[in-house]
Each structure stands twice: as structure tokens, then as C-alpha cells.
Length: 118
Length: 114
Image 1 (cartoon, one colour):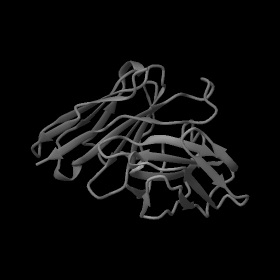
Image 2 (cartoon, one colour):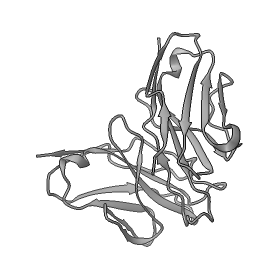
Image 3 (cartoon, each protein chain N blue to C red):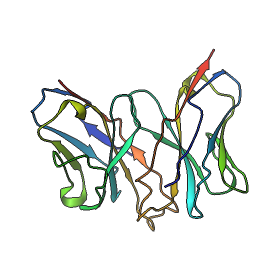
Image 4 (cartoon, rainbow over the protein chains, first blue to last red):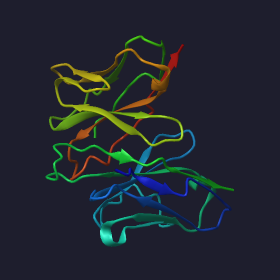
């Protein structure tokens, strides 16, 4: 079974440019999350989708960040325009919903996208 | 969501048993304790989860005392490949429908030496 995949693995852009990160969750996983870790800091929650709906976006830093999950499959996270402080590693994770054979929740993470804004 | 405290780093030698303790004094009744492992350039990987007493799987054991204010991850006979950062997380098994909105903290950097 394929795991959570993220594209690209690395992205280097200049300040002011736009970048779109993509996450393909494990097939059948309704829950999809975005996290990020900026340099030297802890992994922080950004937002949570249940299928195509945003369940919780309390961790989104500002309106330069836009996440979508059209059709409830893969998700994209767009940063426009990118700023220097957006540099870091962006992780995506997915999980099954309760009742789908899961008695508790185990998150499956992708390898992350390393974003560098110069 | 309960805050956790764990050692910043630990060193061990191959073949030894490693125990990493996590404090979570404000754990709530419906909170579970979950441990993740993270290697460089990879995302966190689920290791084990428990609510009380002892849980064991093919990778590790998790010991949780009766008051649940702490927990200990036990890795038997570690090898060089167990060198990683280990995170202790506390939260409801299904927080608002999911466990995703968790506080990772700084984790414990385990270094296994030959």
C-alpha cells in the first residue's frame, strides 16, 4: 500500500513568489492534515480536512496560505506571496475516520516538503 | 490539549534497553498517550499508543502508571537505526473527530552508539 506522498520534496523560491505544495493521502483516508516546522521550532498544526471540508484551520498563520482538497482526495497548500518566515518543512498526514476499522487514530505522515524562501 | 515534558536528548549503546519518560501532569480523562518516531528528512512515524497500564507491540512497550501523569516508552535492545527523535503526544483519541490537532513538543533526540 502506498503511503502519504508529498510533492515536491524540495522547493526554493524567492520572496514574493507563489508556491503550491501537494499531498496525496493514503487511499480511503478521509482525514488529511497539514503541519509545518519552521527552522528550530516545533512541528505545528496548520489545518485539518475531513474529506473535502475544512474541519479545523485554526493553525493557518495568515491569509497568504490557502489549502484545498477538491473531491476529497489529494490536497494542495498554496503560499502566495511567500515570505522569508515561511521557510520550513511542510508535512502532510492522513488517517482513517472512526468506524472505518479504527478504534483510535494513527496518523500517517509524508516525508515533507522542504520550502526555502530566499 | 495536555502539555508534555520529555528529555531533550539521550545517548545509548547498541543492544541496550532505552526508556524515555514523558510527563503529562494535566492529562484529561479522555486523553490517550501516543509516541511518534522521526528520522531526519522524514515525517513522524507512529510507534505506539495507550490509555493505561501497559501496551506492547513489535516495536516498543508503553508503560502508564495508574495516575497517568507520566508514561515511559521502552525500546528493547536498540540498534543504530533507532537513532531518531521521539515525540510524546497527549490528546483525545478522536479530537473533534480526529487526533490530528496535537502538540508535538521538542521531542527526545536518541543517539545510539556502536
